[in-house]
Length: 370
Image (cartoon, rainbow, N blue to C red):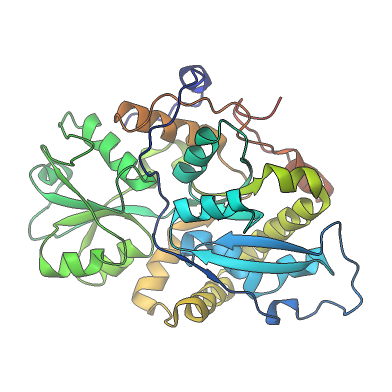
């Protein structure tokens, strides 16, 4: 992958329908309602409601969604919302979260770039806006060191990605192309065998020897390392400033129009949660793991949690230029027709929050609402 370009808009502005492939996020499955009263701790019983009685928030039980995990766990969103109740659902798949947003089952969601692009273009720009960033990094190529000792050795081996067309799959296909190797994007067959494997199954596949490595997000990468795999490449090293979007914040356009004050409160909670994380990373890591245990029934062990947490950076900036580049990679891989991303971002609410906190504005790379 060459040095990342910062100006991409012209190459993406040609409108075309997105093919019906699934551009999923980092993990997959159904969704779960996680609403409880504990998150309202510290909010006065007579706290004033905003323009909505409640706001329904969706996110993944993933470390790359740490802002949502911790913001809910510590009541930081609820504090900003006052008497407007936070209701949450967790998802294991980008498509199911987009479906929930379209159906009104959630109003705001934390999600990866590929399903955000997919949802926006399939609705012809009518269903969602990206309103903020949440996380960068946390994606690695990890391999069996007995079989693969260098990047050139990847050729001829079986490497897992989470799903056909998902964010990591696109990144790996692009890296393969930059190496000058050939792979059929749909089948995964070629100079490298790209094996689409659910993140939950990837550690077992590695243990059994059916794959030789994986290009995957955290904590899956660190789970493989705990089984003896080695990190061969951190995707952050391929990007300018070592930054690329892995998690965005999206909102239903209908909800944004009807309840801008609620959207601003959630964004304020997100910014303050990211401040909370940066102020005490150790406490934040423990909080995220406690949230994961509550949601999945099992906390991550230290040998997985510690390296995974270290490689993820929370951010308010949506890193809009990198989302455009990721879309361009999908186009080059043959998985996506050139999408029209005009209007996918509405960063006015976030920039209003940032201004109120004395922070600089963030940019939409030319893909914002006009």
